[in-house]
Length: 240
Image (cartoon, rainbow, N blue to C red; front, side, top):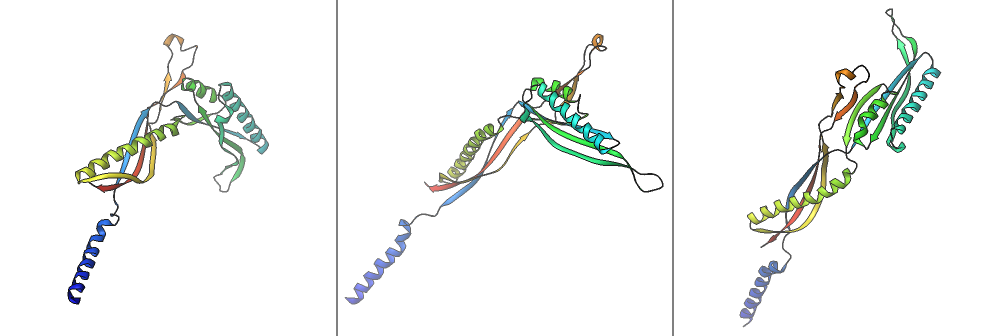
């Protein structure tokens, strides 16, 4: 009887050891998918980079020239309706100028001042006029960059679409493998971008009979912007 009892006890123990995994938590399988979403929109603002350079014989002369050029430039932008917060100095420096005679060495030839300004224009219908007026006090146009006033809002909307696109793909892969799709376990944002071609600088030419009385005005042809976001997702897989 003791042998039979010991045998039954061993059988029950063996059954318990084999059956235990069926009641334990199942392993958490996952699937990783990168979701992408894009939207093409027309730009509604532009950032214009102006610059000026002045030269003079003395340091005080170029300092005054730089101060006067800055004053005129800011006033011209304010007169075009640009908010003061949308006008920013991005570079300003004063440096000596040297000449290099043929016999060697260097000789102080005077001084120069360089200033660069960044202006945000939120009314693209006024962009050409803004550039023309800006170049009356600045003597360089270093570039024009088109953008979106509410870029962050558009990206937030796209993040939701990107996650849904990832979920759709993950669901199809899971079903093909005989599994179900569970909850979103993790998500991260590796990148986002706003891509557009370089704007083309055009001149609106007046009619031939008006050429003597009016100069051509600046006109730009912006390209549409494509906003793209990516979201890396990790979904749980379930047993069907």
